[in-house]
Length: 271
Image 1 (cartoon, rainbow, N blue to C red):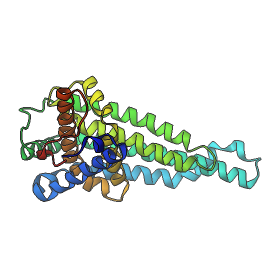
Image 2: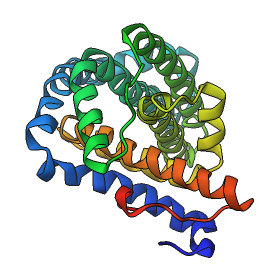
Image 3: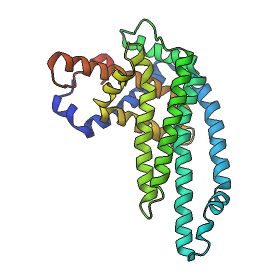
Image 4: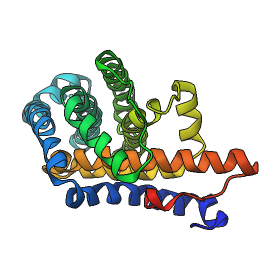
């Protein structure tokens, strides 16, 4: 059991969210056959999106040149800096959109596979909900919504990337946190919907535990940026998001009973 003081410390909560993803990876040893099924849709979607990013990178120079005709009369240094910033912004925004789209499309394409992973993790941890009550059309709606929000995040990250000198680094940090939040939002939806939480209740639950949700989401997003990391990490992210959801619900239950937040999370969640 974690102490209340530790639970209120944002940095400690952030790293416990990272740990939730790590516990998700632990299910590769507990449920190897089910976890392996999640590799199939992740590999298919990952290859398609990777091909798109590579194609964009190949033609990025021509795209930037076409967009920066206004800099032809500038000095070489100024023109190069402007073109580098715009190119970095375009590529960074595309990567953000690809990461978010990867999750949305993979969950949509592989819904039957991830349903089995989710159900197996719930049963392993105990007290699994009777039905997921998620459905194919809900998956489509959530996927479209996630891609649209990812597009907004990509635009924001791309615009920040245009800031001279610090834009590229700052845009990368902002992109990591925005994308991490979106990933955690989408990945925890199934476990929370299965327990009867509507969209407003899910948002309130995540906002009440921002640091932990961000820790899980950012860690997942960083895994997705590693070559082949997205394929291997996706089943673990589904398992880890189930653990995270159950933990957040336990925290809420304790909060409702005591009137103040504590970090009492059952041992069955591995927190």
